[in-house]
Image (cartoon, rainbow, N blue to C red):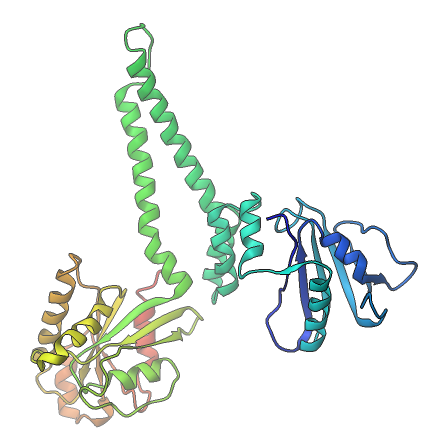
Amino acid sequence: MNDTITAIATPPGEGGLSIIRISGEDALFIALRLFHPAIGEKVKELAPQKVLFGEIRDPGKGQCVDEVLLTFFKGPKSYTAEDVIEISAHGGAWITARILALVLAEGARLAEPGEFTRRAFINGRLDLTQAEAVADVIESSSDKALNSAMAQLKGGLSKRLNTLHENLLAAQAQLEAAIDFSEDGLTFQSRETTQKNIHQVETELSQLVDSFRQGRIVREGMWVALVGKPNVGKSSLLNALTGAGVLVENALFATLEPTTRRGQFADGRPFVLTDTVGFVRHLPTQLVEAFRSTLEEVVGAELLVHVVDGSDVNPLAQINAVRQVVNEVVAEYGIAPPPELLVVNKIDAADGLTLAHLRRALPDAVFVSARTGDGLGRLQSRMAEWVEP
């Protein structure tokens, strides 16, 4: 951990700017070897937390590679708590690679993925929850996801956990003192008070555990499984909801691999949509295990979108058959079935009398056509209701 590492901190490709970051005990030495200020003589030291304009030159040839802005962050007041140099160059791929090669030639090594954050954690600059939040900030795709990640990055979760830890230690101290010095005539906190304090910690820990589901939805998106009998239009609905275009429904057993895609609600919040194989009761022996493995997609789902064929005049029979299979699958895991949203698909191909009958029989269902797009907005709005606003 005492060597000097370097990496390109901006995404690959061409752009207005690129940043090369250097961290470690030789970061300042390397910067002084390569950097020449635009005005005045070559500097022998750099003032921390100040931006300098100048050139990066090849020490061997004296050739200017690029005009840059250079910033020196003196440890421990830096991201890694080590001396850090950031070189802001023009965003050409060749220029960036050339500067990186010069830094490596001066003795730095290429950083491993996530190594800057790992050093920040090891050096005490970030704790583990804050280090995990760095990736969440980068990958956030909505205001709520960003706000949640920033709160964790600033230590919000750490403070809560530290407070709970201190409260447990205080309760432990009271219990041990009461046991060790019970015959010395000293007065200790009552059992009822200690029990109340422990129960309060338990309650707050339960709240943190319960918040995991919502936190995962905010970060990764709500996990939605499409279920239903074969040929009800699940694949077409998946493609329509995720913007992948409408595909013709596959044959009954064209594939036994569930398809997963990501989409976004109107407000930008993400969701993950999985298309399961059509639920049937009787299968050839060689397909049973493969079919059941696809059903396990429903176990981790936050919501089941149960798709019904709009041309079916007896929908309750197919709905109950699918629900029975779902109940059997989740029972093996000892959990309750996920909440269900009924969707009547293919309304463009159904006659008016059948649709009128379905609307009476299924008043809470959403009526859509994956082929024409009719009702998809209403479906997304109903799906979004399951995510805490």
